[in-house]
Image (cartoon, rainbow, N blue to C red; front, side, top):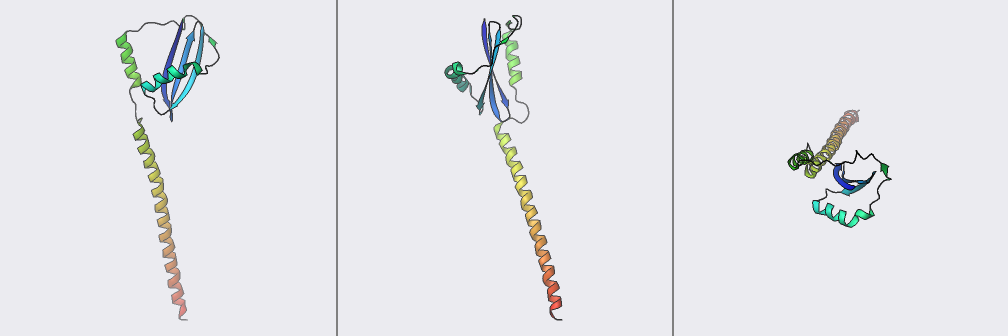
Length: 139
C-alpha cells in the first residue's frame, strides 16, 4: 500500500509544499518552497514534471495501524477543507504591502519632522547669536 499527500501552507514570507509519502511500512517527507502563492494548475504541473526529482528524507519505519486509511464522508471532508482554508486576519498580499508602505511612510515622516525641528532650533540659535553680536558692536 502506498499513498502520497501534498499540503501547501504559508510560512512567512513564502508558500511551502510538504510532500508526505507512505509506502508499505515507511514514511518519507520532502519540503518544497514555491515562493509566491501557487495556483492549482502550477501545483499540478509541478507534480507532473518534478515529482520524481524530489529529495525525500530517509525512511522512517511506522506501524501498520498508523497508515490505515479511513474513508470519510465527502460532505464532512468538504466542510473540514473549507474550515482549514478559511482566511484568518491579515493575509492578502495587498494588505501586507499596504501595511509595509504605511510603516515606511511613518519612519520617513518621523525622520523628516526631526530634521525640520533641528533646522528650526538651529535658525533660532543663529538669530540669538546675531542679536547678541549686534548689541555689543556699538561699544
